[in-house]
Image 1 (spheres, helix red, strand yellow):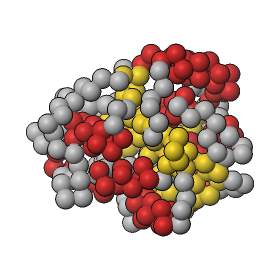
Image 2 (tube, rainbow, N blue to C red; image 1 turned 90 degrees about the vertical axis):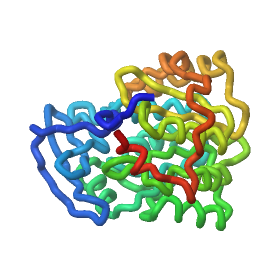
Image 3 (cartoon, rainbow, N blue to C red; image 1 turned 180 degrees about the horizontal axis):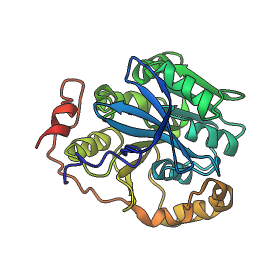
Image 4 (cartoon, rainbow, N blue to C red; image 1 turned 30 degrees about the vertical axis):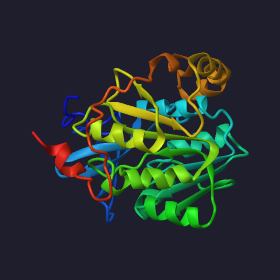
Length: 293
């Protein structure tokens, strides 16, 4: 795969002309809130760049402004009515807010390491942890181990944890994915947001394959994101995915999610070098691989 040094996901763009309306320090990097062309965005300051983590269209706040958040709603095609959901990474709260509206009976747990992100999401992005939605300010891997100890299980897990550059290394390893798999119910589904092209692509793909076996790759030409969809059960066939998409079409329309166009974009091919080493707790040189020329 080609390197993605200039591709920083759909959520990681640079906006030199955006108006900064709020700055908040954090142990994990400065958090900025910017406004540009009617879009309010949360950005992480990374070196001299600003990279979007979450945005809302102030003219249509329910509509998902970023492509990758719409893509992650494809998870509902594999588990149409999950009763328990875990989301790692809060951002502006787009995903948990939408899922809480769509699945009012579901238990939704959100894990976010940075208290400042929770504060900014509350103040500027209208995210509230209320009803069946809870926020845990904790490292995602620490949360996972404690949840396993406490016997928690989830039907749907969404991995959307990024720092300013990429996914934290300890949240990319085979051991972490195996721990996360143990959090799933017997019919559980895991969906992860990552890069469509990267020097890590082969390593990441092999890591997911070792943890889950065959998975679905979901990419869209207009986005630099790749969504990995994996399941404890055998993956559904295309006809089942299309039926699920039709059943969700009307409910997802207010969020701007073109769900019926998604199944044909799913790829089941093993399009990576199977000889690449999986990322492990002993071998996770993500920072080196991502920056190699």
